Image (cartoon, rainbow, N blue to C red; front, side, top):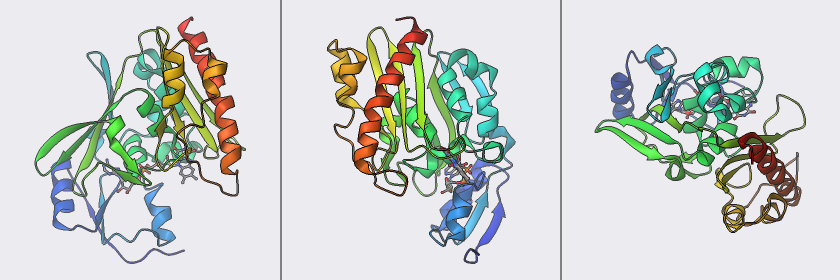
Length: 277
Ligand code: FAD
């Protein structure tokens, strides 16, 4: 398929990207292009202009920042996966990046693009939700920080304004907390039929879902049950509560809800094992 015609401009800085977006409300940022270009080829997206930020190397980094790790928006999935800083302090993120697509996707796709795209089937948004991560956006009026819990607003919708550039993602250091990401898919490089992220600390747990609704979701009923002392198996029985999964050629909604229960139990058991109890 051939996309509709569009203009193209390469931004030399975040500020210039913001200016270009502000000047044309139908312009779109191009990062790794691995979500946007397929949509354009199907004509499900028809931006008037692509503002290419793919070569803003200043936005490609992983570094410690106090009790957090700062990840530049243009950091490729491959580099997130192989980051020693993340491996040491927040291995849930580096591990999950290694499960995204295939090597080609991981060498081109960026963490910022994955998050800004707002696809409920994406893996990293779920992980960021479970981690209570923060997203930093720069727009015409300066920079703002958005909690992950407020960032994903609907199907392919986020709290980003059309003229904002996502510049950084901040995740907490896990410091002994347990973690797990369970991705259920038919072939190694496929998207998740369902995914579950879990972070456990001192009896508390944060649990979030991939592909169980219009956006990444926290498993609130599971979390409350665990907070009240339930064991992983009993808490997992509440996994379907508050979810609205899709039915498609891979699985029905009912199958996804049954699968979610199994994956939540596995995620909690693995996370608790890693935390040492
Ligand atoms: P782009 O495609 O360039 O952009 C995506 C959207 O985000 C666009 O609307 C763009 O304007 C916007 N955007 C990009 N960067 C910014 C920014 N810094 N600030 C504001 N807006 C921005 N993902 C998974 O999670 N799991 C998978 O298993 C998986 N499998 C895949 C398999 C294939 C074959 C393909 C093609 C993709 C797959 N993906 C998967 C998606 C992949 O991770 C994409 O790379 C990612 O979703 C988008 O990142 P990108 O850098 O390519 O963004």
